[in-house]
Image (cartoon, rainbow, N blue to C red):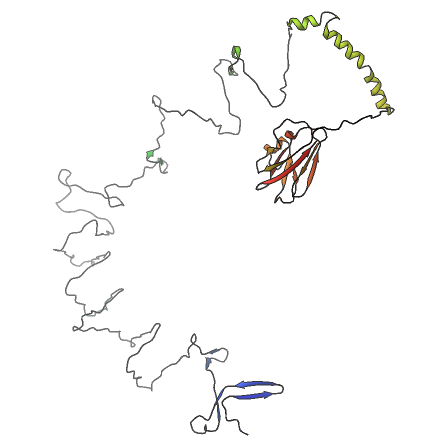
Length: 419
């Protein structure tokens, strides 16, 4: 039985496919046939492009040889249309005197050699700069009437050398020449050059001037705090007003007799030369006889230290025996917490003394490393022992204030307990 419905099914082995068709369309030989519905494509033997909105079907219109293709009605479209004039001729655009809208022209207007001049009637506006060039050997162009040139609206470009000839010249008493600067104002920008051709500089609104001769007096205002910096790699040299070659500097303090108070974090190396006289009465009286407290105590110390040499001999021989009868336990337990930043700080500023040591703990909730150390953390931020979150550390130390700590980033917590 014939398939008289639109669209047919094609079966190939075990696969089937549907083909879009129209059945029974009008036309010669189509009344009882399937007409396939197809899509168009264009291209050459190597490239094929399916027709779509983005890629429309290109169409070329050709006329019969020797005739033109007639086009009538309104032509509309989008995009660019190319208009080409006939070979050997020119493209002519003509308006009408009856129209209220003139034909607008933009761009460059050029004439044709031996062509007809273009006549212009009515008002003519000239915008931008126009160069007027004469012809060699021809009569000069005379300009009369009209308006005069104005510096604010007109620009005149002069090529070559300009000279004044004839009996009329500039007279200093009667004539003047005015020069305008680049900003069209009365100020002409100038530069001052040195003998070697370099530009002489300035600072702000003041010209920099070098003074080579003496005899100049200045009034100078000096601030309360004045800094002195040495430009070279060596230290800043300070000299006194003495007449000797080493120029000693006199330093006086606020103590009695001009003495200078000296303080230091560590012991100062001090040496005493020549003879030192001791004139303290109590000290001299204590050294006079064996009945004085100083002599008596020195004798007691000598007697009680006689065992030291014996202990030393037994230590060297390995024969010293000792018995520990009791270990004194610490009577104090100190616990606390320290919130640390990136600036090194003491664990605590109290002077409490511990006997055994200090346990430090970085909680697991911390997010970065903690550095543990001494006072050197103040000058070397990373010169410490890194303690990761969740780690602990025991330090044998007798004071909490001797421990410094800081965080690597943010605010971190450090717990401690000491005894």
